[in-house]
Length: 282
Image 1 (cartoon, helix red, strand yellow):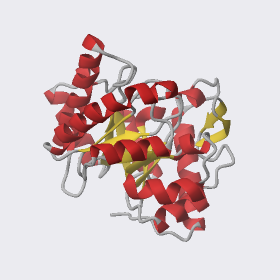
Image 2 (image 1 turned 180 degrees about the horizontal axis):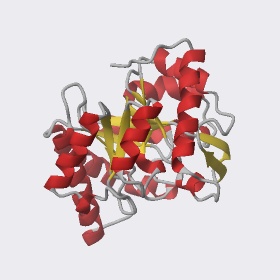
Image 3 (image 1 turned 45 degrees about the horizontal axis):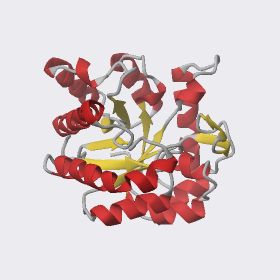
Image 4 (image 1 turned 90 degrees about the vertical axis):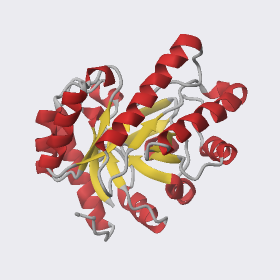
């Protein structure tokens, strides 16, 4: 496994500042978000900017681990659905452009909506997620769904049903343990089931259960990263473990992105050592 950082924690920091400092900390890759509010919002990335970003990562020997294109495809129709699908298609094309040998493109997205819409909208999700998976696969990109509290796809059983219905060997998961934790599902139950389906991850700390929960920077809460890493290793996961800082944590007045990135790195690097796991440094 390798250790990476989600740009989610630095929405307004230019990559030219972020990438060198994250590489110096020891991170091996960065997930780039292309949704509104980020300096890398998709419409701002013309051909020249895309090439410059690819060169920046190559120069610092950093991987672009995934493109985050979170877009609601559950609770939208008409023009709004078309706009969100255009973003997802564009993100898939971008991930294909940025891919490198041994680093296939990955696009990560939620499905949006609300938990109580699952029964009504799951048929539409089979159709829409299936089409996105095919669009990605045709371009050599992996489409990765993310379970997320408060959305239509908030529980492992829903994900498993959706993946069985679509029945595609290329559809995968971005596994964010904070969402299973805040739904009260322990490591011992979810990792053996979800890790084999996962091609990318997020980790952050959390306290309490949804909807009365608090997301925190890795290391600020009670989550047992040693147990988690051992369980992921035992389940055969060999991808990136990605430190993420939520918008909830960023909203606090003491937030400084590079301080929290460095803190998360130290916590996770120590957890690898304490778990007796050797990180893949290639």
